[in-house]
Image (cartoon, rainbow over all chains, first blue to last red; front, side):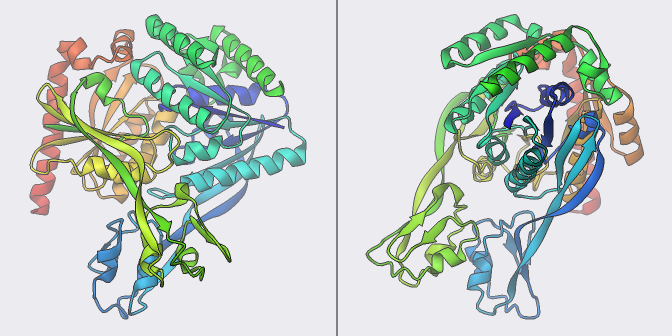
Length: 286
Length: 258
């Protein structure tokens, strides 16, 4: 069983449209949405939720006003500026428990934090593991690790050939969490100066964690000079450009219809995405 | 006027503004360094650490720097005073000038997981008496919250598509949770559907500007040229957008009597 994670660094480059098409093209697979902050894959796959679980993550400090003597030690020592006048700001608290350990009045408790939900769903393409991190919550990396672990369990149970993972944007903790131990990263970029900058950084993360990468240039015809620059950069890095996909409104129309683009239309873009999946699946088996 | 690029994972504003960088500072977090001459291996530090960043064995101590959040509990609680804090670099903040705009951005080092300490450092550069524009990363979790916190207004840029609407709803919930008023810019209008407009109408969220899907705009963007520079006919709309936001903020601070 092999796992490919679709990443981009920059948001909005077409990750989910490509991951959704892979879901339709791959034969034996489990799907996982690792963008737990703003998951969108379900909008293409129309899942029926089979299981819903609470995601308990970390702790938040709670100050018992009855016991608190207002000595101010917690506020003084908190490195995250999460305590003000004996009140805890939940969005700033990192759950380290420093205040809990040092409070002379033992007025502070660490309460377990319900930080979201995760789901196992059925789609017409196969099972999907996805999640919804609560608004303004931390620990998205931990939730990503959890959904991947569940997807892996399910893939083993079903003897699935592939895990197809839609990754989060950026290069920080959820990205690292979605990448570590994956067999391949597909990096979707655009031929913009911002896209190139972001690709360099996310490819750096792949190198850092030793995950092989392929690049897909989406909307490559928006700026062909920049596309050439990306190809040159990838050549220098020893990274293959696996596809160049032209700008096409069909991708958005498919999204509005709630379908992966390869199912919505049989035109050029779909052919390119099919060829890309061929290449990706071949890289995964080699 | 000041621009702070708080998308420290993928900062891009410098590409459009081309600022002259005049200063920089490493962003470090304090991590423990154990003096094993003083350590008695009682394990108080490991017990206290919520992130499992320190492990104590009968004859040695292991620190996992990547897991440490720099809270300082271990060094404070060590009964032998055997833990010193040393600085570990996780990113950098740079600042400078771009055509009369004060500029600052942060960059998380590749391979590092925690953007929030870098965001805090960028925000520490804010000139509280002037107008500060903060560019924020995508999503709804800790980096976004850290960036939006304490703002007077949040401008949400979306697309008129199902993905755009879904992520917009999450963003609106986030700013509501933080008590920050918001307005919407619809970008790449023309493809997609009308559901973003319908949602905004229903929720009473003003749509402050609509930018059409236009390959010329996309080409300018790809070359790192701001819309108002490449197509000066857009200047008026952006000035109106800014004035509208200022009105919303002034009205609100008036009724709150700050």
